Length: 122
Image (cartoon, rainbow, N blue to C red):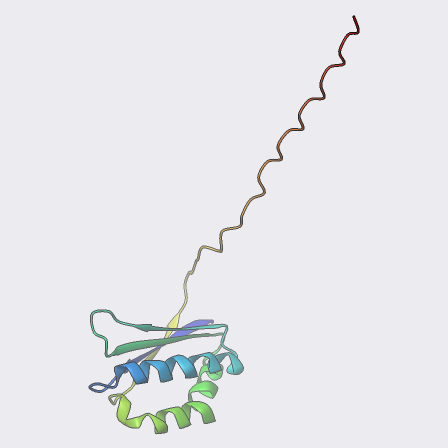
């Protein structure tokens, strides 16, 4: 069953800006491992809380991403920028929806002006 993984990152003191940029950089790599979409959110109430999300068709694809070379290297490189333990949870997606881009409509064509009536010769 398709699902979405939520990874709850918590940045260490004064590292939230740099760490958020690093998470935003690595998140799109999930698409290489079968993710259908991804997102990264940062809380406005707690600027150190960063949530990474990735939608996968199978848990196996998720684990290939999480244990892949890029994510292992990401965690190693940023080890002092986030708190441990890292909490991630697989969620079954029950329903989703979104508004698409607004499609501009073609304006109604202006009616052609009527041809002037022929004048009567006097």
